[in-house]
Image 1: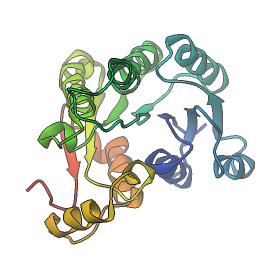
Image 2: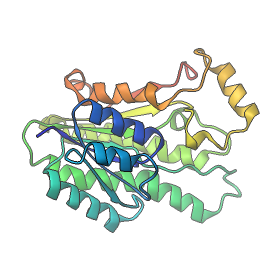
Image 3: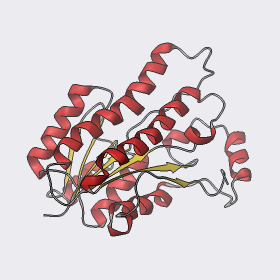
Length: 242
């Protein structure tokens, strides 16, 4: 059986691109999201033996654990985890409702920790190590007006990456972050035309990124080339932070 990779939030955007790339590379994939989306049904038909989906809310511990349990029951212990699921909320911190702050933290940070904790219990039981990749953001490194709470959750993911890499390294499990820049996905849909133009002007490569720019880095870190890379944050942003 091919190696299993769990991808959270795999029904659209970057998560969907990662799921598709993994299937094309021969991996088995188990993914979850709050809704099935428009594209996953077709992929489930094409790859019925290597693709599994279950509805789950990463911000809910019971929902997350049910997804992990169902995955292991079907495929066995996973080789990799891509902590991709996340939400974005824009607003000046002084006026951002606390319920929105709590939702951001619960989904983007606590949820990722809960998934990693649940997956590691199975990953540690299998021989040969494994891979964990957290999808953070350049916002966690540089900040952006109106995204203070979101930035805090993404910076937290990078901290989780560094500490967890030390915890599980002796078991040959690598833990890294991938920090995309501004991608042309649904999550950037709230940007105005002026904001998008400004970002493009500030980016040395002269464009927004795409999910297809990020997926190859995920495949590299999952494969043999990533075997001696751990505790790192790989920035993929067209040079905007250089």
